[in-house]
Amino acid sequence: MTALERIVTTSVVPLDFTYNYRVGPYLENYIQGLGRKKILGSKCPDCGKVVVPPRKVCGLCNAIMDAEGLVECGPEGTVDNFTVGHVAVVKGLIEKLDVPQVLAMVVLDGASVPLLAELKGVEPSAVARGMKVKAVFRDPTENDLSDLSHFEPV
Amino acid sequence: MQRKVAVVAQKQINSADVGMPRERMLYELVKSLYEEVGISRDDIDTFVLCSNDFNAGHTISNVFEDCPVGAYMKDETKVEADGVWAATYALARILSGLYETALVVGNSQGGSVMRPYLMMDYQLAPVYDRQLGLLNELSAAGLQAHAFLAKKGLTPDTLDEIAARNLADAAKNPDAFNGKAGASAADVAATDMLYEPLRKGHCYPFTDGACALLIASEEKAKKLTDRPAWIRGVGDSIDTYYPERDVVDVKSVKLAGERAAAMAGIGLKDLDLVELSAKFAHQEPILLEGLGLPADGGAASVSPSGGAFGAYAFNAAGLVRIAECFKQLTGSAGDTQVEGAGYALAHGQDGLCMQHNAVMIMSSEEG
Image (cartoon, rainbow over all chains, first blue to last red; front, side):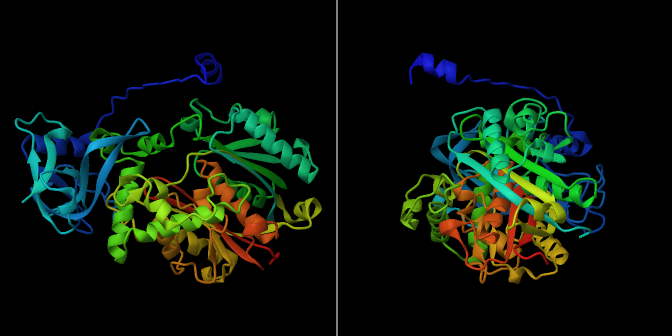
């Protein structure tokens, strides 16, 4: 296809909207907790399950949870499920990675549902369900979601 | 149901690159349906369009669809989710007694115009998952596939075999474009690894597509065709967000299936075929288990059309599944025909790891 043909047959229209969402009191407390290197979850008053990151409504039984009475989980936990990424999806397009990325669903000690995070410091082929891992925080922290950097084997 | 309602006609366009704008694609599609049935836009009481603003790239995605489908200045509404919801909406409109005929038209151009994986990014929790950038449609599918294989004690070979079977079936279906005659598990296993155990060959193809269904009340259906396919039951359910949900034991498809079967007055084991929107290979056995069917479907043929592997245009996809059931129940499915097909189930999904599921049960006999 020549440049001229390409111009008349398609035009690329990128749009980049920016949204400044409020995170709400639950996630705000969670992020402030990360700033203190603590992982907080909300405990359901009905079913007793601990959900990380905390939220208002328990996804398991629909009860309302308290934003202030958050409980500390981890920093250690167990790999419940994982995938080894050989690609990344960037703006809807597949990009090959030079180094595989391990994504793990970690059930933190004291939590009832898994938290998705990157797992580092282990060969992808050595990752297994049931593996004990611990949270690694950025140092110093910046009161941001990315303060919880990744997990690594205990 | 308060009235008997039937699917009267179907038309589909599916392509990797259809080479024309959406509006032209819809015009060609609906014109061919009108000509085949011998009707005009004057015979349509209500139009249910199914498209999505993010997919179309502009607000009110249906605004330029009205003219090409013949809905200009007529009763028209829109669904943004999968086509099974749009067909259910059309059914509800006819059941209301206010309408006798409905034309349901779904479309998107994920093959040539937009990037389908972006759709899932827009469905992620904005203040958490979108910030972390770890979840996307493929990483979520990889996690779901891994959880499924681990729970069942299966190897990735299972996924290769499912994909190969669907690709080979799709080759026999003239309405699918992504079929591969004689596709083997080894072919699929040779495709690029994405998120283990998910390979490129386990994924739905990017598709430009559209599907139109003409749905009518009993009285009208019998005037329009000698061979309608009767809508007997519908069911849908939306589950909680990932990841606190069990993505292998999918409660929402179970509930959707049970609701539709109760409405139809049959058991799901009475089905002769199921047309599933399994966007990824591992989702087929997960859906079957949710519907209470064995992994090979048992007495029911599983997606004889090739399912989502033959084509998967967001919005149109669920309508295509209904259209394939219509073809089977009216004996017009050609080389993919299931002999004596009496009951069929069409499935559509939406959301991360099949968060939403909807089904429609249809029959060849009036009931």
